[in-house]
Amino acid sequence: MKTKLYDLKGKEGEEIELPKVFSQKIREDIVVKHFEADKFIHPYSHDPRAGRKHSASGTISHKRHDWKGHYGRGISRAPRKTMWRRGTQFYWIGAEASGARGGRRVHGPKGIGKERKINKKEIQISMASAFASTANENYILKRYSGLKRIEFKPPIVLQSGFEKLKTKEAMGVLKEIFGKNLEKFLKNRKVRAGKGKTRGRKYKTSAGILLVMGEKEKAKFNGIDVRRVKEISVADLFPLGRVCVYTEKAIKELGEIK
Image 1 (tube, one colour):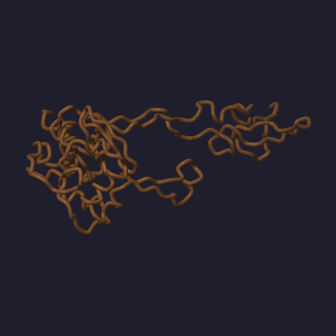
Image 2 (cartoon, rainbow, N blue to C red):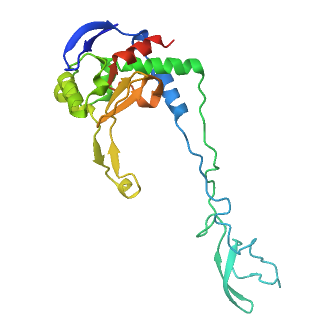
Image 3 (spheres, rainbow, N blue to C red):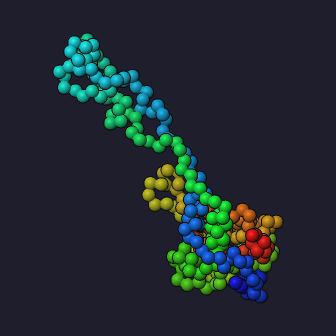
C-alpha cells in the first residue's frame, strides 16, 4: 500500500510505501472489546450505614398489654422512630425501611468495578485494525457524517520537520492539504444542551486531527492532538476512522513494530 509524501508547504511529493499495519483486515468487534477493556470503571457505592442511622429499631409490637405496643391501633409493623410521646401515646414516623423517607437504599451499587479481560494477541489485532481504519476512506466517511466525499488520500504523511513549525505555519500546511474541510477536523468546543451544564460538564469537545510522531519528536498545536507512536491507545483512534497525520519517523517506527 502506497501514499503520497507531503512537503512542509502542503504539496504532494513522491510516493512512499506504507507499513503492513495499514493494509490489515479491520476487526471492529475486537476493537470494541479492547476499548471496553481499557475503560477504567471507577468502583462506587453508597455508605453501608446510609439510611440506618436512626434510633428506630425492629418492628412495632402488636401484642396485648405490651410496652410501646400498638395492639388494635391499625398501623403497620414498619420500623419507626419516636418524635414525641405522652404516656403510652407515641408519635412515630417510619424510618430505616427502604420505603420510608430517608431510609436505606434497596439494591445499591456494591463498590465493585466490572472488568473485561483481553489477551495480547487481540490487543495487537485491535491496534492494527485501528491504524488501518485511518487509511480507509469508508471508515473516515462513516465517522465524519458531515463529509460527503474525501478530497485527500489517507493517511496523510508529512516530511520530518513539521513538528518544528509554529501553529500558524502548521495550520497553513493542513489548510493546503484538507482545503475547506479543515474546520471539520479541528477540535471544536461548544456548550452542552441540557442539565449537564450545571453538573460540571458544561462543554462538549470534539476530537480533532491526531498528529502521530516519532519517539524523539516533540510538538504542540492548538486544535490538534499530538501522540508519539508508543503512546497511542485504542481510545485515541476510537471510533474507527479518525483523521490522522503521520510524520516520516512515525511511519518508520510503525514499520518496525512486529
